[in-house]
Length: 398
Ligand SMILES: Cc1ncc(COP(=O)(O)O)c(C=O)c1O
Image (cartoon, rainbow, N blue to C red):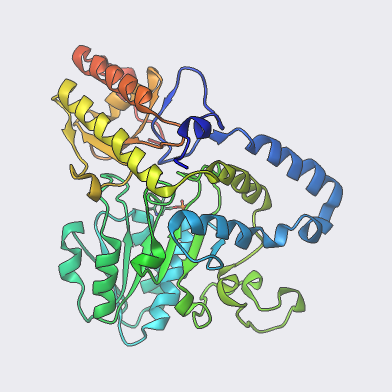
C-alpha cells in the first residue's frame, strides 16, 4: 500500500496560516501527543506514583521505542536505545569506539559537522590526553583522508547547513578497509531520508528525535550499536541504568546485556511518552515513499525559487541523491530575509553566515505548501520587503 500522506498530514496540529518548513529543526505537534502526555501525567504518574516504573512499563520505554526507531533508520530490532541528549550520545559512541581501537589516536571528521559533535570530540581528546587528536577536513575530502592512522570516522550524514548527504556505505566500507570504526550522526537523516544503518555497515549511529521524529523540544536522543559489537562494547558513561542489575546496587559496574548497557541514568518518561505517541504517525509510512516524496518537494522548491528569485544562490547539492530533506539558499542578507518570511507565516530558519534553511517533511508538507512558500519568498525578494531595521535585529535563537 502506498503511503497515504493526506492521512499523515491529518495527524498534525499546525497553526492556521503557517507554512512550516522547519521540521528539520523542531518537528510540530502530532495530534495525539497532548492526550498521551495528559494520560501519562494524571493516570500513570498521578495515580501509580512510583509503581509506574513497573505497572506502566516506564522502565522498558527506552528499548521499546528504540525498536520503533530501528525500523525508520534501517537498524536491526533490539539494537537501538533512547536517552540523554544527542551531544551525550555522540560522546558515548566516540569514547566506546576509541576504546575498541586502542592502538590509534585519530578521530576523523569534517568541517561541515555540527559543532557540538566536534566540541564533544575535542573535550574527549583533552580528557584522554596521550596524543588523542581530532582531525577535520572539508566534507568532499573525507574519503581521501581515511587512512590507517584513523581510529574512528565520525560524521553527520546530512549536513545541517547545506543538506549535503555523505555516502554512508562507501565511507564506512573505506573506514573498515583501513581498520577504523565508523560513527554516524543521523540528526538530519532519521525520518528524513532512506537511511539504512545496518546495510550501510555503521558501527555506531546516534540521532535526535525532536526534528523529523517530532518528540518535542528537548526530546531524548537515540544510539545504535551494531549487533557485532553489542556484547563487547564498553560504555565509558557507565551509569546505573546500563548496569546488568541496576537494583542490585553493586559497588562496581557490570555492563547490561546488549544495547541496555548504553543507557545511562533515569529515563525522561514524559518526553519518552510524547515520542512514543509521535511515532504512531509513522505506522503506515514506507520509508521509500517518504524519500521519493521528499525529493519531489525539494526539487519543486529549488525550481520555483531559482525561476523567481535569481538573487538567491542554491547552497545545497543539485543532485537529489546527494541531499537530505532540506534545501538551503544563500544571500548576504539571509537573516533579514528569513525574518520577513517568518512575519508572513513561512517558517524556516537561518544559519550563519548567510544560509536560509528550509526543511521538507512529507508527513505534513505537500506541493501546495511548497508553491505557496515560493510565492511569498518571490514577493519578499521582488519588493525588498526584508530591508527594514526590524528584520535585521538578531534574536538569541536564529
Ligand atoms: C547533527 C547534530 N548533532 C548534534 C546536535 C546536538 O544535539 P543536542 O542539542 O540534542 O545535544 C545537533 C542539534 O541540532 C545536530 O544537528
